Length: 131
Length: 201
Image (cartoon, rainbow over all chains, first blue to last red; front, side, top):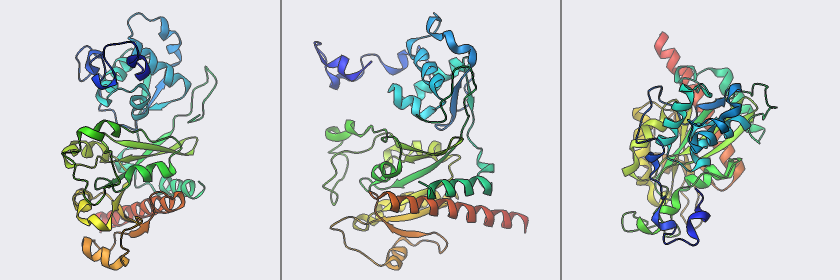
């Protein structure tokens, strides 16, 4: 739903907010069964069999959008939420559905215990210096 | 575009992702800092509070600021095909603090931005990171029109532990922000090393 599309020729305008309540897209669910607390920087990757997701009648347009974006390039949860203009909570539920359906998988971010791994930190410093 | 876009069929590079938080009081320049180094325009949700938040948000002393950050702003720096750093601006007002725990989990470290005109605004952030043992660096954002103070005076006013780095910075300046981020990572390394020592000794 684009902002431009809402504005013109309708009795409501942008200030009315989204016309569809966000959690309507998840059919009211605020968590999903498969949901392993997805971190904002967890990366969502499309499975190779996800190529015909456009024709899958069980998927909502938002599901299809997520798979589409992830097929172009792996996307973080935060980026998907931003790109599709959906609350993080909604995105998490939708990603949970897709993980269930084996259309995407999620790579977890580095767990905190490994953060002290110096070689990664050194790589980050080198990368920042090179910017 | 971003992480090594690949041909269809070939498995894409699955990058390692890391995050650094940017905290501090309302209007201190968190989003500006993120925007100074991010390769994407930071996601902004702050328009929403422009008018509606005015009676609630105290902008005295920072009259130049007309919007506030409701959710979070984030930016991205692709360091390598397989290594991506995200910067998250934490919500500025205390009523959004429920998001902090989620944001700080698994983070590499944090930058606490301070404004010498409203130093007390960053106290809450300092407390938060100290209590959770998250390594952080204090960046004193040098606003035009704000008085400059010696680093030691600011350090004293903030009652910082000796080992917490404090530096003057310009949140608009890419080089300055780069320096701060490098300092955060270096500090996180030392912090991790110290922790390991205290565990084994």
